Amino acid sequence: MKQLWAPWRMPYLRSQHEPSSGCVFCLKQNLADEEAHILYRGETCYIALNRYPYANGHLLIIPYAHVNSVQYLDDATCLEMGHLVKLSERILMETQRPQGFNIGINEGMAAGAGIAEHLHLHIVPRWLGDVNYLTVIGETRVIPEMLDDTYAQLRPLFEQAHEEQARGSE
Image (cartoon, rainbow, N blue to C red; front, side, top):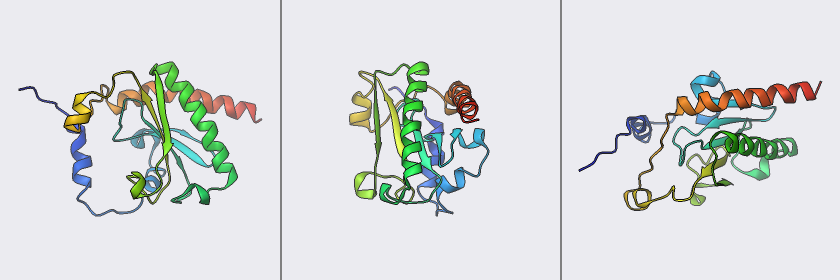
């Protein structure tokens, strides 16, 4: 019998049974970037690695505003989210070389939102054949790279993009 070793999942499994001490996305935005795997901080949103990814390079675009629906976002936030989707896709194409993307928002528990109280947008790189019997039958995903390694690969490109944007707005 083969074993799938994924010790990074245990904190997640334990957290499912612990009482919440506040919104994870509101708490995350107050942490150091490296600790929270925050890749980019914009005016109204930030980009972070998903701590429990569906695929390697799975990013989240998270508004600073604690709202549960797109209808409560102001226009500036919606516009920045769109720009950050484009930036994220460009950087992921350069570094991860996916063959496609799933990009979307799940609003409400019925729609599959794991954290329904704080709206966030998912960008999931995809490759042909990346979902196999293990995911379908075993309800298990294999992520081939540690989050810290993915962060180290992506962070410099997001920093560069942020610096370029700052120079362009001067």
